[in-house]
Image (cartoon, rainbow, N blue to C red; front, side):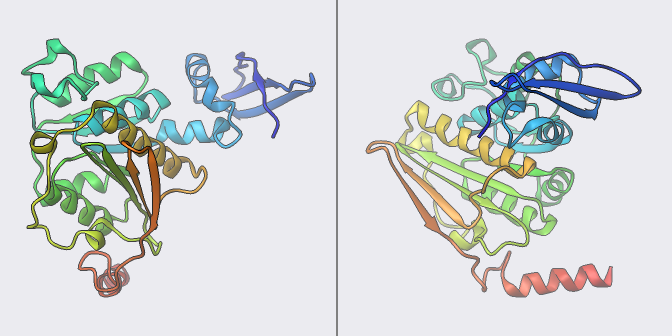
Length: 295
């Protein structure tokens, strides 16, 4: 695979831009593109643009993309910071909680001075300081089912960084109804997992794996979590979201990634859609298809 060393100059002429790349052999490659990104953006994202799998087109897709991040705790901190740094154009942050001293051990988007502030306000300030070229909407309330559905329908990908099963299942159901890709993550103690759901695929949704919304789920406040654990899982969530938005590589849909950090063991489990699932099963798919035809 050819690796390019980039020149950063762009030529503005009639709404067009020219990116000049030099191969190690000295051969020039000229890439003509719609001049939507500024010189500052081209330089900021240059290390991503150098990747053949991203290039100008992929960076433009990120620039135009909209992502919803639910939960600005440990997982959401890492996911949001990497999505912002990577240039995802619009982020919507949802969290009703405030910053507590006990959060700061792992929720790196917040600072000691942010104690008592709304997490979405603290996170917004951190993200805009990191990348002032993106847009951020902050929602500081717990969304009901209808409100969650509305937000999910407005974005290109959803990152579930919450810490309770009932909310995860609500987000999952909204994404399936809206046919919006979903990246779910969880971390506790020294363990973590990531699952991706995509419409039109045979992979399991979150409901397929966890049928009973009434079952008790453990929390970090009860059992603890090592600080880097949430960073690892949140970073993987950001990576999977970027892959979904750009078409890069193969996402984790249909596969559940499990991490045991104590042994540094990574396992991959194939997880197929449950035909009897009340959210994504065959009957639900038929009902949704029927509604689209009638509509």
